[in-house]
Image 1 (cartoon, one colour):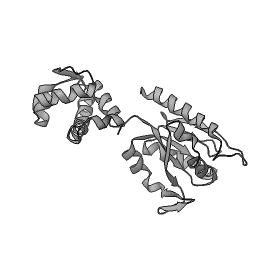
Image 2: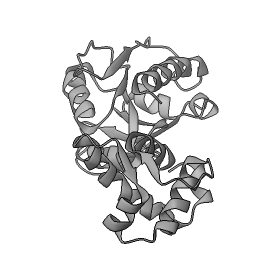
Image 3: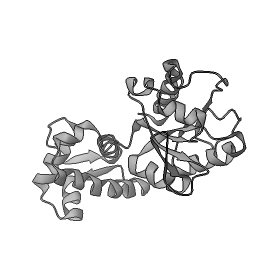
Image 4: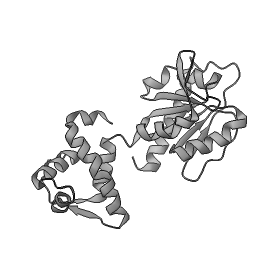
Length: 224
């Protein structure tokens, strides 16, 4: 969730979470607008309450009777952190993956790396003070955090397979630092970079810029 959530009581946030799948179902049937009266009937809330919640959601303060479904979806997803371009999962707990996890430059650019996964892990373990999770937990972590960015730092032999797993889990932008060329499903951005054997991955904060560019391009593509 975003910092804006702090302005809303938990009860109202739960209402927004309940509204979202309903709005998506309306959108799928081609319904473009929803009335306060229809929402009140669907959820059995008072119209006055819903009208105030949606006015606070949009920030207009205007007590309206009708809203565009697409606008409400966008506002709720933004509020609840669905447009998350700050958290970045990392797959590959080798020299490159661990080095990037310890690079302080990402946080300075509001990019937060983790959790760290490894294709060889069968259960959670700790490497150099960093918790490493098995790939079997990837999909759940991506969904819980609404994560859209990932770093592919596996060995070359596993890069293509893991790239596909990351995409299937919901990652839309992959920074490929495996050294192996990969092909991602349509709609998934891939940006590749190769690190030399003796490059200072932990200390060189300029590496961050590549991920910043990828995040920007992904945000533009997704309309965020």
